[in-house]
Image (cartoon, rainbow, N blue to C red; front, side):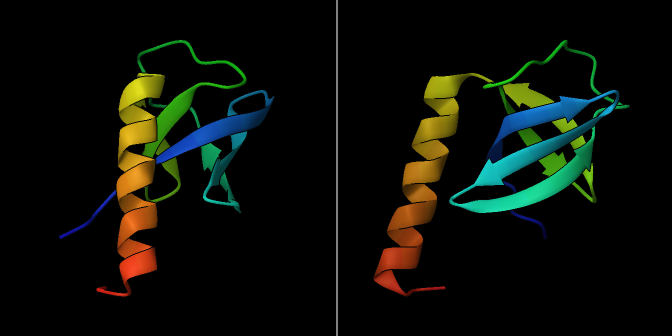
Length: 75
């Protein structure tokens, strides 16, 4: 089972993007996204590919949950 959290797009170069999740940066491919994305958008990623664009409010809710899990040390 995989758990995915949204990453914020902080840079885009052609079909590659850098996302940030809780201070960690990752490189992802944008090739399979149906939606147009830009700087500041949030995406769910799997295996190095952005697979779904998510609303900022939903993204923030999920990131708050991630922080809560890390802070509680129940992982």
